[in-house]
Each structure stands twice: as structure tokens, then as C-alpha cells.
Image 1 (tube, rainbow, N blue to C red):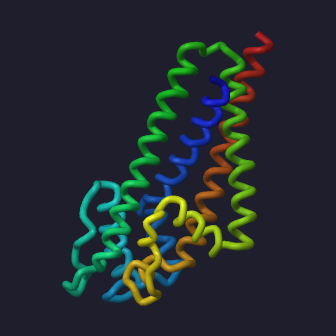
Image 2 (cartoon, rainbow, N blue to C red; image 1 turned 180 degrees about the vertical axis):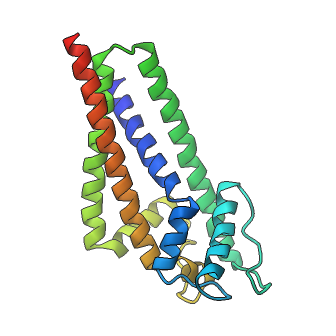
Length: 208
């Protein structure tokens, strides 16, 4: 039970960090900072197309929309990859929701059980350690980490596109480097916050 609480806690924190990166506040900043290009240009043109892409991802929409100049934004293979991204994304969201329900139920059943709060704190600590280790690897070998991630979650192999493709031009490598760093920072902050507050709660219960 306690190990499951720790794992579920880490999953929930990571999911919250990921969802924050899907907000316009982040995507617009990251697009502007990574020289993102749409078929009709940079800046607001790229942001508009990205908003449609993110909207389709989150709302289970279609990726066969047109770009600003009326031509299809994504080729058939790019659309197929984005549909795979939808499957992975919603699979993770479902896992995170189930994890959240499990953690809340575990704490609600025994709110004064210090061991459960200790398990929550360990989940936050484990996440911090995991993200730091993964971040060191990604910082020294980002291309290898990027490739490994896609080979694990997209084993069909339809994730490698030429540099001239609209998907790569809209979301170039600097975009993913910046977003990966932001995801790591948010996960570390969230994991540390959970560790700190749950640890304090457990200590208070143990003294009472």
C-alpha cells in the first residue's frame, strides 16, 4: 500500500507539471524562444497553428486542419503520429486520474495514519531524485534521451520526420529542450513541496 501511494504521488505531480506546459502561457513563450516556423511564418502565425494542434490533442480532435495559407498543416504520416501522441497522452492522464483517486482515498480512509503521509513524502522525494537523474542524462545526451523516449512510447517508428516537415519546423529541437527543462523544474518543485508538507504532517501526527 505505502509503495503504491508513493508511486501514485509521483505520477500525479508529474501529470500536473505536464498539463501546465500545455497552457498558452507556456507554449507561446516556448515557441517564440525556439524560432518556431509555420507555413505562413514565425511569431503569431506559428502560435496560431500550435494552438490548433494543442487544442486537437487535448480535445481529441483531428489534425487534418489547414494552415494559414489554406494548405494542409500536416502530412498523413504526421497526422498519424499525432494520433499516437493522443493515445499516449490520454493513457497517461487516465493513469494520473486513477493515481489521484487512489491517493485521496488512501489518505481519507486513515487521515491520521502517519505512515501514509510518510509514503506521500517519499513519493515526492523519489520523483525529485528520478527527475534529477534523468535530467543529467538528457543534458549530456539529449538526442539519445529523445530517441529513447520515442522508441519506448512510439514503437511503430512513425516519429522520425525530415527537418523540412511542418511538425519539425513548428516544434524544433530547441522547443523540446526548453520544454523538457521546464517539465523537470516543475516536477522537482512539486515533488519537493509534497515531500516537505507531507513530511511535516507525518511528524505532527507522530508527536500527537
